[in-house]
Length: 475
Image 1 (cartoon, rainbow, N blue to C red):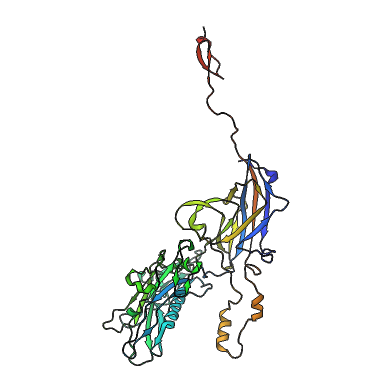
Image 2: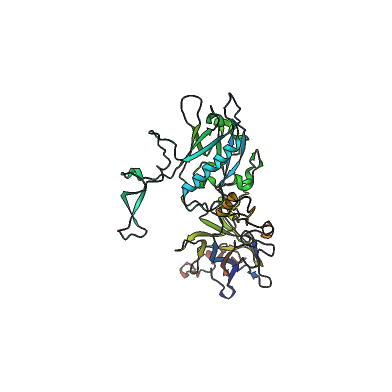
């Protein structure tokens, strides 16, 4: 299609300026008004939006409300003889602490283990001094030694003598470990958490079979119903969560009744939670194993998606809107561009698109008159980017409050928090981008009869209009 160059315009937007303070949003929804300079096209032309540049700093967390939440349930454990384990039943959501995990799946799984332990300990009521603990790995080995470091201490060494980009690897050298064979160094990145119950009460007895832990990584769009637990209705982010992708669990897409643990073998689970098979009834140990490898990048957002409400593309419903039923139908969407996550040579992460010379992302606008455009930046599920709250304290602040609770009650002024607002309105969560709006000529069919012309009789012979008759057929 030919382009009307005189009507083409490059438009640059920085959502930091006024978008948040004027009642809008700097990332998740913002409007661009053309006021007295609207774009128009007649039936002979069509408007096109072409993305040329986009930049969004990653000043939000890799692990956040859209990928850190699991549903966990346990049975009630009633006491038997003195010293027996007593627990209340539960069915609720647990969440990993939000933040960046330094691209270490070990940190993710350690955080998951501690989160599960905190839940179990919150349900234990007797006997006194009874707690649950965990360790990485599968517990004690055949010789009684721990397997905690077996899966993580067998990395290849870097061969600094060879000039390879990024360094070569030497199979017979080992960092931290006494393993000699290549097979011992094969990493599977599937991890196990080993749990154990203990008590300061003499004669303590318990059995993980009675606890009946069930864990689900739910991925159910809100449009398909609402999950209900002991704590009430699930939020959209709780039940439509990407924790399965982050932690290597089985994706659960079916709503099951509460309490989940009471369903026993019929309960769908994302992880195997297996108690030990020690002879006797005092089985205080259990191991949890994931089904699939953990996401080594420790994030579930390799791209962000720029959407425009006035523009339509053909797209899969799975990346359109969290409120819709997700299937594999191809329907029109509002996705304008898919922006990748990039890292520069100083380890700075951003979502950046540079299309100065090409046209990989464009869409046509069917309307003949455009005086405003509404944009939003979302994840692949149509969910908004999660801002970081002002009261999200760093670890040093939290530790300071623990070490000196009487000296300083709080490190952040409550009055300041009340007026701080949110990161995507008055904070530094904003984006800048450029796009080109152009008008293109398109072929149109005029309102004329397109059928074959009727025949014409000449000298009693049939001929067609537009064809010169051959004289040899004439009398």
